[in-house]
Length: 496
Ligand code: SF4
Image (cartoon, rainbow, N blue to C red; front, top):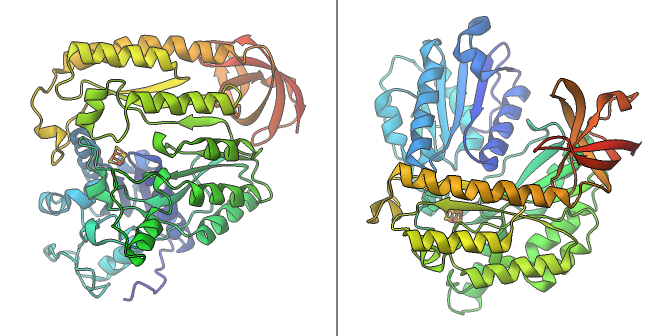
């Protein structure tokens, strides 16, 4: 069978699970779409694992490998799929499939392993597998870049460092009801010392604007009003074109450490997305602080569909720790970017990720980090306890902290986060806002329609204020204080 042939899966039950980040979710949605087009019936993963309604014929698990724990969870999920479905095909793809491929095949938890540059071919691989004698011993073959696709093998993994092309996958819907995550690039060139992603996903490869725009048009036609532009390192969008240009000019190849991020391709893409009818809100995924400059911020602020919501990844508020993490900025530069965003946008929502208990983090370093986090006053912090990942530089560092130390530091920051998040929400607790309604939630025994403002503030409006279903509609509300720690109470003004 050639990979270009369209496989047929009529009457086949398929269960899919996505672990890890939004990029994985996007790719899982794309695989789901391929199965649907091939006539498969998509069934609930949890139910299928328990064997409910006959389980599933095929399980696809898009694995994650960000930490050793993520690896373990990926293996557990593969085993779980097999447990009550001994006759099913279990296919692993994603970052753990890329990094731990041999382990997976040897342990027998997966029948098929497809690395990160073969996800779009997975459905064809499964079709081919179905045609083969399933009792045959799994054979390991490292597929070289020029290998003939479709050769019989259960392991389809190529080294990501040789990967220079963006693997185009498409979605026309996604798990989220009103918000679509659109992938615009893959890979990362940053090599933070705690992160395996550059090895699992390779160097930066960008999706063409044409492909992104075609997908967003399709999503708008399906009724999606909000898109989140996402990727592994969104700020690097178009970076490889810069690399090529410098090589062609005969100038020194780009030194990742010194290259200022070129925001033009990303900005141009956002402007093009904004022109698409039906799309009313555009959000950006996690940004590298170095991409933020006045020109970029002012250009975004001039685009009415752009939401003033920023995820600027910090990781530590202490310069010596940032250095050990191989982050390419210091706290002074980071603070300057935050101040710039606050100058250009009205009350922007500035969010971040922080890792506590990085190897060698002393009490003094943690206190420095804590003081910086208090100074920045983020709208929301995502706090992670450092978790070791085999194969990374940080895993080999001395001074690994105990779980108890990490837990204590995490709890300390969580207190700050709760206060800061509350203070940020309070800014919007008594004014007119517009929410995109997402779902109905029961809060303290009463039903509310809930949605998010452009700044990602959650608002709940009593259901009895509506005569019609407002889900996936914009509703203007006047907010009246806190309903609970999570939601502001909104009173309906109008459905737009
Ligand atoms: S920026 Fe750092 S943490 Fe993020 S994907 Fe790249 S290497 Fe990993």
